[in-house]
Length: 376
Ligand SMILES: NC(=O)c1ccc[n+]([C@@H]2O[C@H](COP(=O)([O-])OP(=O)(O)OC[C@H]3O[C@@H](n4cnc5c(N)ncnc54)[C@H](O)[C@@H]3O)[C@@H](O)[C@H]2O)c1
Image 1 (cartoon, rainbow, N blue to C red):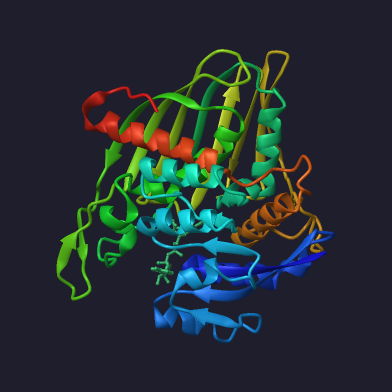
Image 2: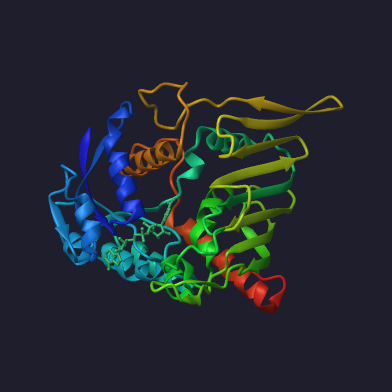
């Protein structure tokens, strides 16, 4: 087992989550790497202070360049606001540093293209954070869809209903401003989570018709005065798909909603074809539904996928799986792939997939701005 020293750039919500992931790392059975956070770069003193009591952390700095240039770090986790992605990801790639990037992978399509160019010209091993497909039920849904059991596909619906912004009095933050979140708004925040599995299945949109909604257009600023909240809250994309594996074209809906009454952090994947179907939602993560025809009977069967993850854990197959487990599995996948030990397991999102997702979101913007049907 190889020790992997991780440097975090951006010690906010997701940077802190990684400390939790590393704290539970020993639950993994026979994994080729052992991850620990050794350094954190963040200009905010309060963010750095949070990491001061983490035993493994020996370096705290306000300058991310210090971590990009450090020989005491093996892998970077870069989790900063979207307007900083391009500069830091490009610098890390040019320095040949391996890193797990956060979505949406650049503030817009142009930034994502430039980052991919820098990565392609480098030796850096880079993947992009997307943890929901690592739920055991999602893995089973993926495997079923990939097996061809659905037959000719008719209808795919993938989505992430968040409800983070239902409260109109929630103060503004960088994720709610186009300048720092990006012109694609909620699609940048939640879109790669929705796109990852369909793209991995070879279901790449060739046309997009979008409806975008800026539901809450003002929010309280730091002094309580209302300021513009100019990002899209909800997006519904109707995509035409020409499947890479052949077969007829079909329709796929991608839904990303920051405002979805009745849902808190619901990620789902539904796909139905002429011969079979599959449904999974994190709202009921212990269940997986599969459709089959039994003669003329239409049968939706309910399975319990259990805690059977890509990377086995000492907890065994019974204990319920949750968000923290999905993050652990994603990191296990990233570091195993980096070590050449992924095998036929599911890998986390690639820079090419993140760029494909950006192409779709960019087409969605053009569609909504008046083009109607737009090409990614
Ligand atoms: N995978 C997921 O489920 C998930 C969930 C939430 C956010 N994210 C993504 O993670 C990234 C960060 O989001 P977050 O929720 O952690 O945001 P956050 O606001 O909680 O944290 C961002 C941190 O970056 C720091 N920062 C700002 N400028 C910096 C700089 N120049 N150098 C280093 N650090 C700097 C801030 O001080 C802050 O501590 C975004 O790309 C976001 O889309 C992913």
